[in-house]
Image (cartoon, rainbow, N blue to C red; front, top):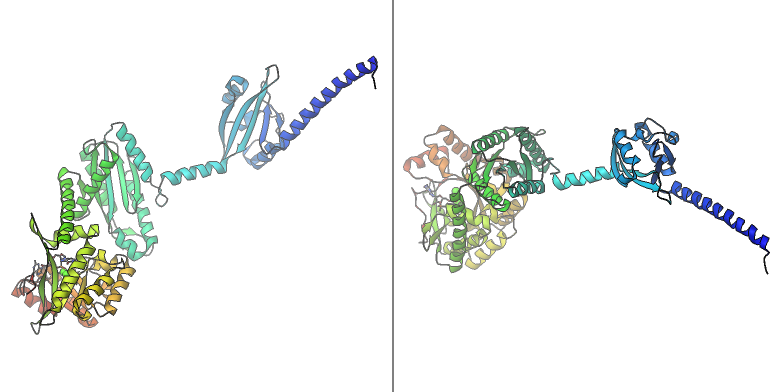
Length: 562
Ligand code: C2E
Ligand code: CA
Ligand code: CA
């Protein structure tokens, strides 16, 4: 088939026509596509700034925020873009010049946040046809973002800065070489409240502590953070010691005011504070935190409710503790420097020895005799107490098995030895190795053992008691001295602390407490023992108040097994 020339001419015209139609078609297809795109698009006249194109998604989005705008979605075409902006001049300057584009912006419209991307539409010859805005409502994403930021940088419970924020700020100041003071705060008695009143009460308490700290430092250039648990820090951007000490006193008095939480009545709590300063006490956050911890520890050891500024000799004392602990481990392994001494416990009417308390003794190769009052607390903090406890238990049972008078042996068990599921095994092993009858073994625990992790420790004590082992409550009068603890467990014996016994002679209040405990013991069928009876006068006094048994230098000092 062939074509004539005229045919060809017609065909060229047709082709041009077709091309135009196709371009139109393509353009309208493109517009339809943009119209239906899930992205909101608008175009704006670069001279009048009137909106000259709006896609469907834009209209839908605008409809959802119409109440915040002076116009309706249907009226957008022809309206000035200024309606979206608080500072239209600034926006106009950006939109007028393609050199400013692309441009990203965030617009706050009442509670909503709009995310805007402006790009330039240009003709094929490069002429600027105007800006095209693609935009979205990103309120939810922004909220999620800020929530994530909040979670990452602030403590959820109290709203205070968290450990991360605190560390960052501390690092930042240290890297500038700036002066810093740091208060490390730990609540006194928080664990007890948390354990006895329940975690919701503990949480409420921590919130109130946070509020009080915020009030104490209101307006000051400080960062108050919660590191976790009941530990808080205050970062102070200077090293003026007198001022820092004043702030510490303010914290102590704010935190020692009674707390009214729900219907718990008034709760009493306090705080201890360790203080360090940079650059004086260190130039790295690690060193400062370690030393703040040491100072805090010193504050706790000084009787709580006080602040302590770090000093070098505190560090020396810590080193000494480490050394002592290492030496104790060596002595325990050697088996030649640790001994068990016994002190008689005497029945008042018959003057007979009913039991002997096993008390550990350590003859340190260089230091000589070290008091258990010094090394037992160190052992308790390290876990070495379990091995020491097992050593005393097995030695005491073997020794007692050989006693002609068949007196019982009383062995001290630290609170930290309980609640681990290991004490029963240690007791069974000591009894079976020695052949001692279970009812000749008495375990002495303090109130801390009942308060700490209440149920697990209590159930372990119940297990021991079910085996026939007797359980005594030691040092009554020094700790919480709560009569509820006496009812929480069927103790076989209550030992009234020596300090109380000695004061009973001169102080009517102490005498009244000794009497109250002795009376309660009689009512509950529990033996009461007065500890630390040093003189005939002490003895007469405690007998008068009703104690059934006595222990103290007046009747015999701790001595090696006879
Ligand atoms: P504790 O259980 O209250 O032991 C009684 C302490 O009072 C003993 O001190 C004893 O020597 C002392 N003492 C006895 N009579 C008198 C007196 O008339 N006047 C005075 N001022 N003190 C008297 P010790 O042996 O130095 O033990 C101190 C603490 O160390 C004990 O207090 C106990 O808590 C702990 N401890 C001792 N041995 C062990 C042990 O084997 N295991 C554990 N976990 N703790 C132990
Ligand atoms: Ca004891
Ligand atoms: Ca005691």
